[in-house]
Image (tube, rainbow, N blue to C red; front, side):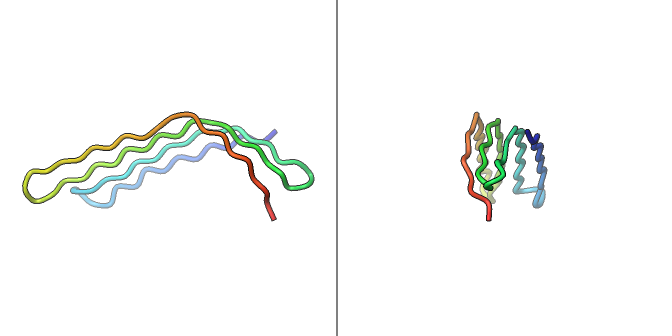
Length: 69
C-alpha cells in the first residue's frame, strides 16, 4: 500500500490566491494498475478593481483509477 500526501499553497499575488490541499491513499499493482482514494480541497480568491470579490471553495472525497506506463 502506498500513502500519498500532497499539499499545495500557491498565492499568486495579493488580489488572486489559490490554495489546494489533497490527502490520499493508493495502491499500485505489479502490472501498473492503480487505485487512489482521498479528500481534496481548493480555495480560489479573486479581487477585481470595482470591489468585486469572488471566493470559490471546492472540496470533497475522490476516487481515481490509473494505468501507469
